[in-house]
Image (cartoon, rainbow, N blue to C red; front, side, top):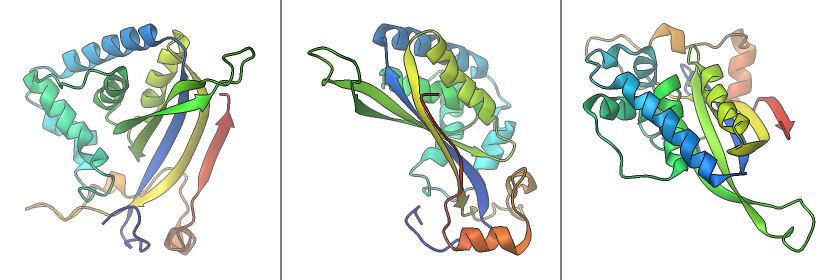
Length: 218
């Protein structure tokens, strides 16, 4: 099952997707900031034998594997690697940023390199500018605020500028219960302030995209 599927499971789990478009301002600062963040994140988990009890790991295990192209597996996979001291061969600051956000907040994060037109003046104004699109997935009770604060902190030190923020709700299918389980953890079944009753189910069933906030030049 993928995001392209039209049908929505009656026991679907609500997930918030936040996408933040950023423009690279200083690549050296991007490298420094993301390296420091990832080093802190890995140090937090190194040698932790109790990592499987981390609530975000439990919550994301309740999502059908593969539905978000592997994003749903990132919290457990990255934390398990950090516990054992494994270091990924991916060295780009974009990958370090997404790994740090996931390890520190428990929210799966993905990055995509892109380009934006330069809006300045002069002979180089038409040259494209490097940018990255950051996607953060959050279930109810996940620390989305911390995940976004990490992105904001990189902007605060001049690594990149925030161009646009877009958020919407997704309905994710639950994973099949594991042996001895009766279903997904109850805390993942609803979000604060969500619509209740038949109204919310009907809107999700109709495939409506709920836009919570769009801001330009945050």
